[in-house]
Length: 245
Image 1 (cartoon, rainbow, N blue to C red):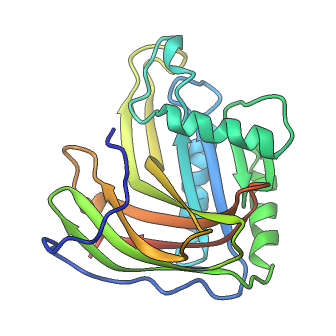
Image 2 (spheres, rainbow, N blue to C red):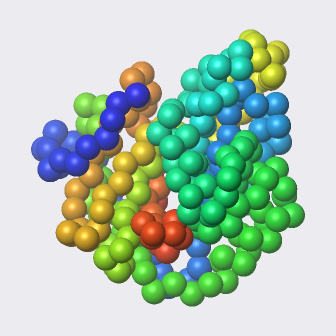
Image 3 (cartoon, rainbow, N blue to C red):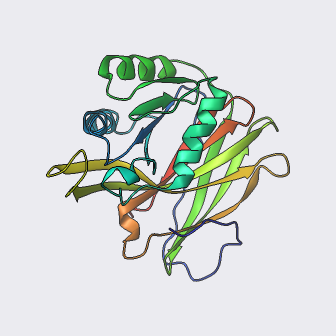
């Protein structure tokens, strides 16, 4: 998987569009740590697909991070990345937990639970949508060309935070041939394909470039960005930018 890096927007782009900053109403960033190698994960994957469908047009940002520690159990998840495992391990520190597990869901960086628990998922999302918020992030000037996505960001937030950018593939299907889910056809939504972050101590505006996975089309993706407290993991603002023009 290509690593992400900061760069100045180059002039080879094909399309441009923008995303407005989040308002001061509530939002919910739903992170699911999952794996195709885990037999307990398909119900959680199905739940976030339902959440994604139910909340179309609402400030609910769904992200599926496929961890890599199940890859040695007989099936290598093609969407797994050790960077996502490291993110989950960072949450264990932030949440004062002694373990990581799948499927684990985390809402706005501050509450975790088993990712297949539908009642809790719906309840926590509803609670977060009711909160007011004074911080914001906006994404704009999207440019797509030659396997790259370029865009600008602007953040209103205290200096102790960072902004996290996730390139998300909207959906995919896998035929699992071995491991705990052998013989199953697994559907996925909102699959994290790459991750980058910027410390906001120096500048709250800038340009980001993300590389598209080889052999994919830009229309399959969107960018989700959120502001996260570097000390405790709490997410305080979020926004997204679609590549489907």
